[in-house]
Length: 436
Image (cartoon, rainbow, N blue to C red):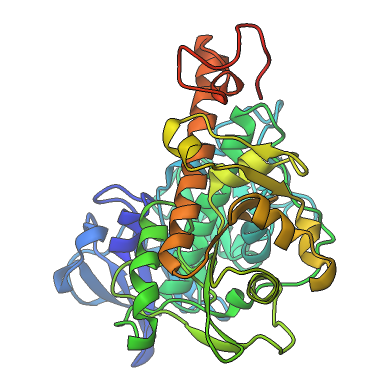
């Protein structure tokens, strides 16, 4: 868990803290020691503490935020608590309340929290797993002041994750794996909001609120145990999706069509090496259990592609926002040589019946890859999962490169991305022609 937070860039070497109820005695809990390196935890970095009086029973000096962990672990259903110092998520709190960019008034339920505001995730995963994220500002500082303990225990009783402005997010869950997913999804949503704002677009939800259906992956999580042999071909690519930031831990999905009207479906397709993956075998003629299953089913029953990945990459979600019906074009030689063209599809297409869905035609137009508003990249391979991963990786790099060129254009006066759609720097469109 600690190593995964470090790999995902949510902590530096010694920041953040973790806790979990003792599975053998729920009147005790384990918490990381003060100054522990979360990415390289050993037995000496864990402290056993009594819930009743914070008495230390084993280990060294507990984290200074142990009182907050105790209060959170006392909430119904909370068996674990995690705190991280993630960059994008923490940046959300650094704004002028008089000129809000990322945050809104908290609304119902948050009026009596100190300076309570909320962050509305712009992506589908953030909206489904987090909902509106409370953002609180504290007067007494951090390290489990009485104010911090009271505010967080109340706020986390209503929401799974809370951002303390200027400090970072806290979350609670049934397991540390559940906390890891919440933190990673929050950071993914925050990165998406930052990219939207820096591109001059509203940092607000990019998908219609009425989009029906949930995700099969909501009830599935990778587990910190060796993967089953059947999941072996998925494991290396799940690690790549996680490490490259193409998909937050426990999000996205992947599938491969079998020979007997079935598909091997991975509903949580991003995880570090060595984690067990929740691989399912589903029949293609059965009613899908969620939007993600329905999407993969459409690909496998109405296109020639046998492998499929949906990756909620922030750069792709930001690039697709408000662009349904258009195409995202490459600005680099590699993607241009590969013939990359990325159709952008409205999220409502997921609600269409398979026979009426525009996705099969648009996938063919995009050479096996397209962008879905609010959901990310849909990449496919004709035979192998590696082809789908390649499609996703190239698409994300196209979106990322365009975002960086666009940011340089706005800040430094360099040409906009559209200038380079027709060729390398020095060529392309004539000066003065507009670009996106």
